Image (tube, rainbow, N blue to C red; front, side, top):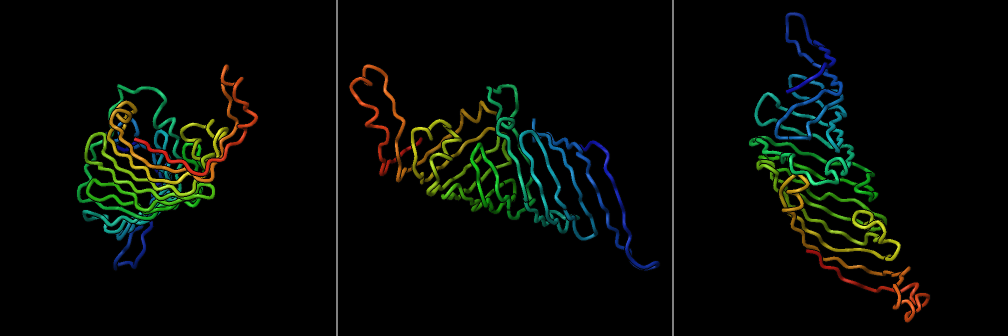
Length: 275
């Protein structure tokens, strides 16, 4: 369903007595869209869509839902046939994980899905520039996305974190309730001081260095409870050129070990296994 008023303009171009080509300009005014598979994430749209007899042109259309805001730009050709040819770019985004996954156990919310997108295909580049993800500043974020037959995928999503970089891939099955997702992350020379903001913000007080490694995650469920229950992760990381500092020990250990002598401990290399 669709709720709310829009501004609508129609331009007719052609010759009297000949062919006339209509152009329809739709200005969405933060209109609400009701789509049951999205559950609690019912979106609203704001921006301009231009329809001709050949294509739909999307001009910086803003899509907002709880915790997520996207800006889309691109074309949809052959929209009168199925499947249409959609080439739509994600040009900016904002994600608030505290709203998307509230810090509480959610038992009454329903999982998202299933979606019925069989026969539909869309794709295009992701160019988000500089963003913040869970407290981590990311620069030059770009990649490629595709939706095809209920499968949403992201290939070669790359960006820089400090002097390091990462590459991420994602495959998500939209055709099942709760979705089903697999993702792989490769990290190279990312500063521990920045990465620790995601998991343990205080870690940078005790540990410096560069983090590299691979991390794979799979799971299903879009409520916090099911997300935690079904998430499986494996990773191997290494820390290089590190430094441990600001160590302190409780008594009676503190009376035996002089912490002043351990104010800075070089860490040449360390491996971390996660599962």
